[in-house]
Image (tube, rainbow, N blue to C red):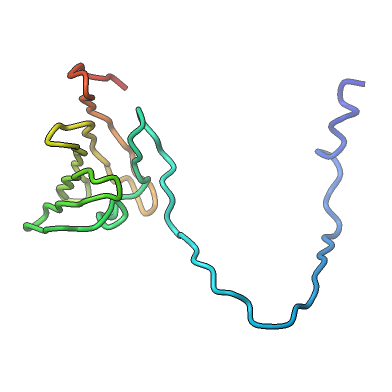
Length: 125
């Protein structure tokens, strides 16, 4: 009886049934947000990306250093060193978190946190 409820694991999908209909008029445009934040550390939203513009609006670029402003008014400093990024996020002049994104291969990187939060104690991950 234990495995009886798992019959779906053994049964292959044979067909899909789609239902659809028709409407009069024009379909309204919808904005699709392609990039979503999907990492939240201590209330700080961090995009899973190595692309500077995914962090917010690029305010200034000096050689390989990007000064970025996000929608929360936080200032992000992103420095590209080779294929890696050193990133710090600050609010009101105080660094909230810093980390390094280490490139592995296309679409793969490791985020190594070196976090200093508002209470000034280092967080170890």
